[in-house]
Length: 393
Image (cartoon, rainbow, N blue to C red; front, side, top):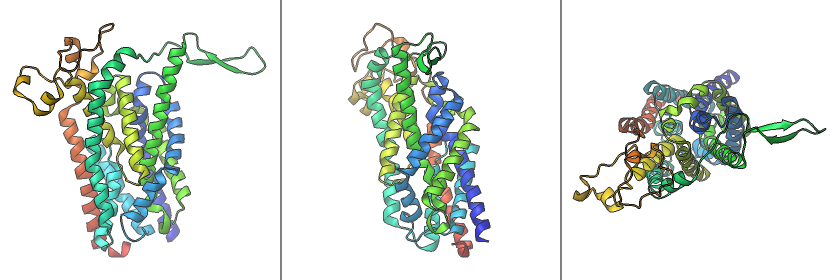
């Protein structure tokens, strides 16, 4: 009986990890794949390696919070399987609404529902987690705003990420030992920029592993029956499988968000989101990588679009700014070559101010709503389930 239940739990863990791999791989490698810098298969392979590294290192802190910190008792095998069911249900609902999956928040909600039903909820820990959920979007937005307003325009004007035709590197077969050499059109600048893009992708994959591997692994760790390393390997396999399969389509679209902005802007978003997520994972806070990503995108767009007015005018919407419209899509327009970026508070070129929309405000509202609805729904459903079936715990 126990072996059968554990098998069911492993299958549920693989299902959760598979869906995580589909969404996380797209967010992590979509910009690079879209720019032709890396192929989908290579992206999925590298994603799997760095997801494992993130899960087996920093992810252990999140694992401890999920399996031991949210409730005052350890998760049993039956309770862990039930929690995985509610995580999978949260993923399904998010997919139906077509929004990035707030898996970490759904996981916390399901475990918190168990804690409420059994009177074992650690209120201090859950309060700390929720406070970070509130603060993280604010941090992501303002870091993005500073980048978009003061950093991105100058970097975008000076830095160009090159991609020439043909392979980046080839193998020299003339000698006895194969040696890598430049492709027919590769320059040192292209090699450097490509290496930089790949390094950022690896960093974000590490961050995704630190935050997402515990979601698929933690419910089966400890009293539930699996050792930590075994659970991490299973979750990594599932995430990698999702990366090689369903993520192939998401890497093309990246949920319609990052695909609409230049690769350089996407790199700023990736570094910021990965740093926020890794830092919070290090201190054991389950956090959604998507949350930091979306709010950084919004912040960069707002910062870039408000350059024609002063900071005070942008924040207070002073009367004198009424005749100067703030264009949220400014980030997607290229800077005019050989022309300096206008100082803060001065009008910019028309080509910059009238780019396509960076993001749809309604879509952002939908994402934020899911960050509230997702964990709330999983908490209520888990609470009701464990109240009705107390023997499962």
